[in-house]
Image (cartoon, rainbow, N blue to C red; front, side, top):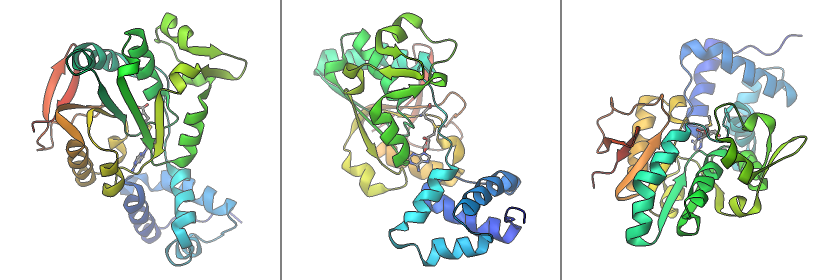
Length: 273
Ligand SMILES: C[S@@+](CC[C@H](N)C(=O)[O-])C[C@H]1O[C@@H](n2cnc3c(N)ncnc32)[C@H](O)[C@@H]1O
């Protein structure tokens, strides 16, 4: 017997369920991608019909345990150390340095941190500048699996790629046969949590930040959802605070209160409030 098929009506109900759970949006053209992920996952769970699996998720899933597993199975966690590095350098040199000098401290949130390479890179850059003890770094992801891996600070070989600054990397990453271990000083500088960007109450509990990294996650969301997340993030910014998105994720088409601003040679979105 082949893998269970995702017919157009099943695609409609599953994509709706997934979008409501974590924001990830599938267009009709993405049906084969979702079918492949869903049918592999449902088959592993012993379902030979995706409709039966859907019923299980909707009507027999106390605590949304199975839905959580499905979300874990479909998310894309691609990340690596020093990704879009220049933007983080500019954030340190054209914002955080001044803030620490004038105010003595700053708070940064890496809001979709995957396995932690992004906040660890920021911690390395801050340590290089003598700022690490003055900047609180909070990092979160909707995926509790990635947060467990991030807390361990152990990363595979693909976590460090061409184009990284070798002298910085070698100071803070211990290379071994299986990959890299983040040195304790950097690992312990990041506070990790499992947080869904769709969950207003959990986001509010984190308090306000001077800068929020929300990179390479909004590309998976539909425009209406992006706007809601941006409003939520804007509310989590201190007045004048900055949001950094991925280089391929311009927010200019959205009419938000955020002001696009170039600092150094990188783009940020500043809270107008
Ligand atoms: C491609 S990774 C990007 C990681 C990192 N920011 C970077 O740029 O390398 C996208 C991450 O967004 C997370 N994500 C997806 N939907 C989310 C949501 N609703 N709330 C929080 N994180 C989410 C995924 O679990 C994944 O780890």
